[in-house]
Amino acid sequence: MRVAILADIHGNYRALEAVLADVAKAGVERIVSLGDNIGYGPEPEEVVRALQAYRVVSVMGNHELGLVSRSYFNRLHATARESLVITRSLLSTESLAWLQELPPVRSCHGARLVHGCPPQSVTV
Image 1 (cartoon, rainbow, N blue to C red):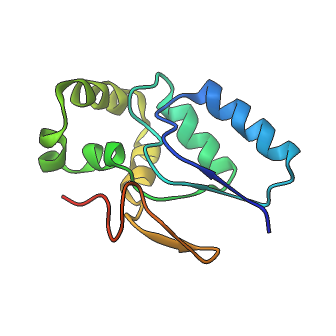
Image 2 (cartoon, one colour; image 1 turned 90 degrees about the vertical axis):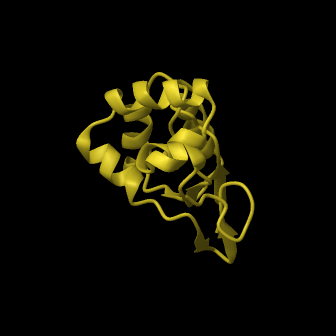
Image 3 (cartoon, rainbow, N blue to C red; image 1 turned 60 degrees about the horizontal axis):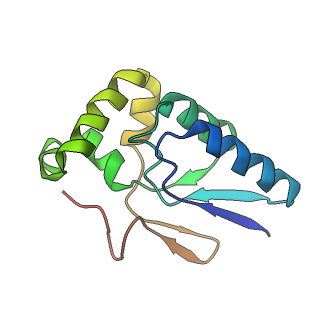
């Protein structure tokens, strides 16, 4: 099975579109994301919807964690915090719920998926 591994999309839907087109040409059967699907980029809602449409298996990155954990949000630098405030305003309730449910670690296709470093890269 051919698997594509994505990471750090950061709300950049235009780049994600290009990657998904390339992945389709390569005959990839499964796409996984190592987190930070949102944050900084201008189109987090579009990114989340695309990930859902393509059934991308994802883990929580530190930017998703910043959305769901106030204590972690407060540990981020000012630019990241400002970005997440804007990101939150651009996300639907459904997309925010999807992001909140992402696990910090997943096993998939014989690999351990994390954002950062094991064992649980993103913790409060």
